[in-house]
Image (tube, rainbow, N blue to C red; front, side):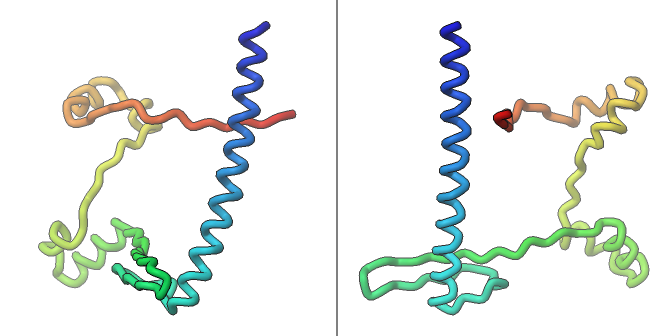
Length: 131
């Protein structure tokens, strides 16, 4: 019974910590948005900008733009425009395991590929709800 009480206490503490984290992250993001607005940094800025305040603070802002590549379309364009030789220098091709296809494939097919795949454990993710 004592272990269940400890587990219940830890679980509730985890829920409380996640809520505090969510609230604090929201406040921090609001502050960041106000700072960006005061400095006059565009939301689609890419690169680094530094600002020194009169009060002795140094603010360093690094803007990033996320880019998602449609690999199939890029390859079509390269073929149409005769630019296929530039694909390997302009793009990184990141093979990923299609786990559902991998699991359903015959071991005769997947076994040779095992030498080219490194598997390491990741951090477990948690989701806790209370009835």
